[in-house]
Length: 168
Image 1 (cartoon, one colour):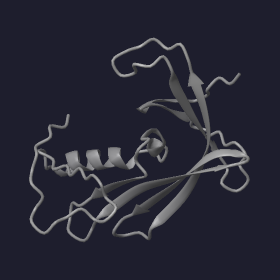
Image 2 (cartoon, rainbow, N blue to C red):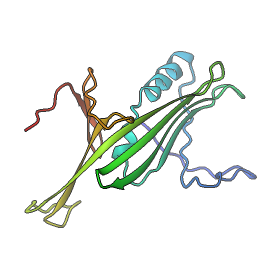
Image 3 (spheres, rainbow, N blue to C red):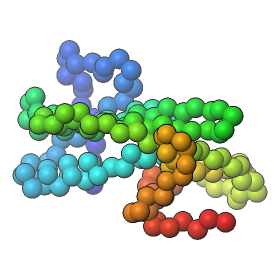
């Protein structure tokens, strides 16, 4: 559980250019086992998490346990629309104090459908809702990729991993 405590930005420390929001977590529990577990959970974040976060273009997870020994995991997305469809490219980077920067690219084919006659609720007052699906494809030739460990399923945020989605 995270209990936010508002603190003022230390004097002289401003957000870098292009950064709109920063969350800094300081753990109440400081033992190494706890911090290692939290770090491991953040490092397991899937690159497609940024697909589900519509308004974010870049997400960085930074661990600053020891000065000048920072670990970084970042996800940056960009979208393109062409005659062949809509695509999203996600660049994932990982940097640690003892390794070179590693990066990988994930490409998603985006499919959008507008669903009508939806029941109204507090969040959606309209009777329409857009469903957006992202299917992983090869960055080289655009052929579908079905990961052996299954596809991630998101409903605003990840809800579960499904090994085989039924296709009709």
